Image (cartoon, rainbow, N blue to C red; front, side):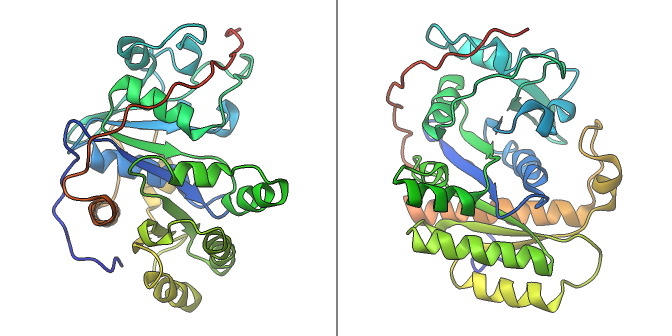
Length: 298
């Protein structure tokens, strides 16, 4: 559980922007589910968007946000400045129990030509700033330990560091609550520490794969991580999500899953205010980036 107290759910001021990159130590770590739960809870307090980093045929978001008639990433012009209206029109609307939030994804048919999306987190931050969202949940798709090691060996900046360095970013690191998941998580944490990345403002989510008490190896890892990370949150197994996914409307999410999601949001917000101040400072104006050519939709 989180090492901080139970803070009330509050959102950032209208002039602020909170960035929550959701990353994973390995595949199958419930990263997208965690991003969905975060958006559901944060949208009750602030204007929220999920940015989908995964390629179209490897992402659940087009299915989860289907039927909204949004143009998606392919509708964004690549040869002229983006307007708030154009960005908002391209985002799919996802209904939640108490509010709604947006998803920016590529929802075209499976046979459409792939989009050449910018890898730089700063470009996605610019997109969120253009859309005017206060909370940005980024469902990243890169393997963080490999990304950091490859960047170290090549001498180039890592995607992971770039996400952590964005203004007012609180990383969320997901792992399966299994022995293999803990091994992958410990390797990722070791690399994060070696690279000097901000574990002290990182929230760890351990996603259970079955009902019952977490295995001893998971409990031991949670105890170790609670001294290094901002918080450790246990996400229980949810048979409804496993059986039906998150594409149904309304989504059936069990009470204990909702409770864990609220604990996660409380931990994220507490880490943000402890790291950056209360209230959050004004969001900076993003610097211009070179235009990236995106092939026309087919």
